[in-house]
Amino acid sequence: MDSPYVPYALPNGTVICSGTTRYVIARVLGTGGFGITYMARASTISGSHTDEICVALKEFFLAGDCTRNSVTTDSTIVAADPARERVAAAMEDFIAEAERLKSIRGLSPNIVGVHEVFKANSTAYFAMDYLAGPSLRDYIASRHHLSEAETLTLIRPLCDAVGKLHARRIMHLDIKPGNIVVTNGPGNRPQPVLIDFGQSKHIADNGSSTRTIAAAGFTEGYAPIEQYAGITSFSPQTDVYALAATMLHALSGSRPPKATELTPDYISRALPSETSTQLRDALTKALQFQAAGRQADAISFAEDLPRGHSAEKGNRPARNRSLTWIIAGLLAACLILLFAVMSQRQSPSHPSAPTLVDSEATAAESDATPAVEESTAAPAIAEAADEPVETSAEDNFSDVRDGTPGPLMHTYNFNGYFADADGKQWPVRLTAKTDNEGRWGSCDYTNVSYGINLKMDGSGLNDRFIFHTNDKGSDLTISISYDGEGVWTGTAISGSKKLDVVLYE
Image 1 (cartoon, one colour):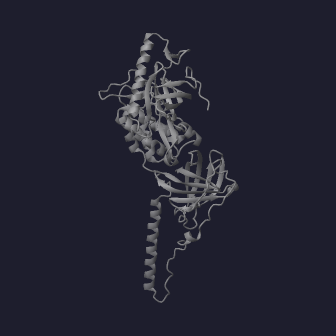
Image 2 (tube, helix red, strand yellow):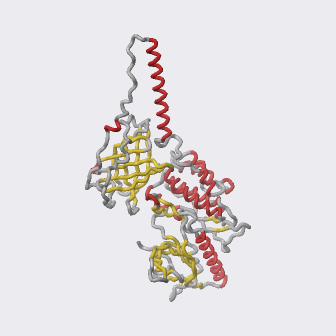
Image 3 (cartoon, one colour):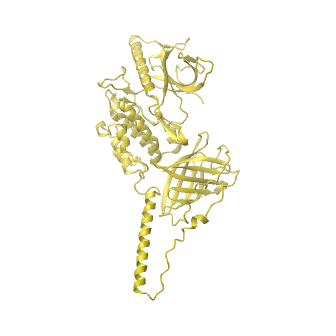
């Protein structure tokens, strides 16, 4: 991968030593007003055995006031004394913020970890976790926009992480999709990690800032109006606005306008029509023009967000719907039996009416599907590494069939991905339909990465389903069950290829 061109960046192969660790610059990752970030290979200096890992190494380099010595790798100051004093103060801020981040390492898996802070080459550095994965900005772009469930799954952990920062009187002040990396978390699920604390600020209990240099940087679309003039007091509502603007971007697929142009009417029009009322209300409050009208902090914002999947109009075949139909069926049966008894009492000479029989009750056992056969054509999964399929796709779903579905009345849209054992992902979309009793029917499948569209036949009831197709020569079976919080997981099998599946309503 080519590095972006950054003036005065250290060349690849440059060695920097902290005293305990040797860092070799591999490439430039990015730059900001306070420094340049590199990918580096780190290895311990002492000991006979050394382990090498990749880290993100940030170098303090104040843009406009520093230049690189043409002979050494020093950040040499070439300006007059006022600039030299400003750079020295800014570097102390840089070190203090890095040490503060290091002190909270492990506080949350959704905050980038800092390993080491040190001085070298007349400047300062700190080493962080190197995170493999796209930014949330690129993650959204690859899917056009995210569903409500997927957005909540990604943002809720960040609210918890930012809430822990707020409890320590730390503000991030630059939350946006570009500063969130979507890594491959446990169970091949996406795990968001907040990075780039270059604008962050700690406000002491007495109200004073621990930074001597005012960091007035901000990103239009994600910064509230008060940040344009600079934050001088503890104001967690600033981060609340940024979290909500990030959610708006995820749901709409577009970057929000600047704070002076963002109105409740814009928010209402930008959100998809299926967005729940609770989420609409939470975002509208968090994006208020005046800070006093927003939630007090990230935890308060999280408490206003929907729990689980919140579509109020029965936007998934939920257990509640199934229970409703069961109760309705029992009531109907009781009424019919009562009518039959009363009829017998009134007309004893007539033969009794036949007893009610559920003709579909035994259909599940006679409607099994054979194991998936090997197939050489697997374009629906594409390029996934071959893995032996030891069990049928339906081994754990043998009881999901519950008769032939009736008229398909309800449509459900899923966004998600297939993932292999190495964590490589392929975005997919499913549009599936059920009847009024929650029996799954047909499904339209799209592999976003390869533009593959397939028609699939479905079976299953409520919280579990199987879709299968041989459309266009693609022998594909998807077996899914509901995990809660709007997340569905399972497997996809095509020939000898088997992948994990994660879907969001």
